[in-house]
Image (cartoon, rainbow, N blue to C red; front, top):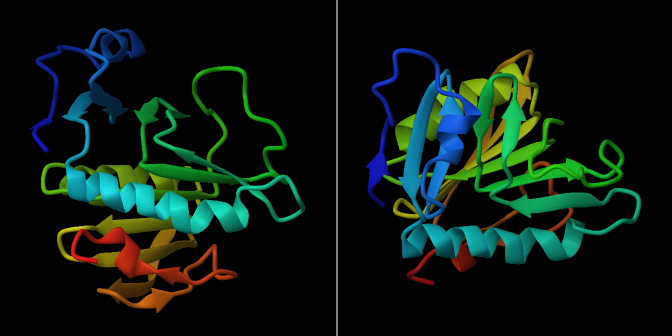
Length: 190
């Protein structure tokens, strides 16, 4: 997936107007004042993203107590940063209704990044730091090429790796431990 690592040269921090001027076929984010843009996901990335939705949403995306809002590629406005994780989830007890705006200012309770060679450094570095700063309690990092799911939990402002799952295992992963996740459904070699 080709990446336009920094859409600069700006002599100032990027603004939302700069982001809005990019073509619609790019996923655009503002991270630490820099504008980042990347192409839509490659097939393995898209398969892993679709698989997470298929596995998690049926059990948790409902209005009952304990339910979640689970959304693919939502635009999050977190301080001055504008980020687009592959998946985000909000407990309905914290966000009973979706906002009317086309973005979310309320931090999610869970984010999932599907890393690719072109986005791994940003996802694992600066975006993970933003998620910690904002107090997002849970993060998953999925690497379709390596066939891994890393389950992270925020503790005292730092990420703790709760588990790293590899290959075609069936797992229970925080915060969705109530359901089994057959990871083979995320990999192209299923």
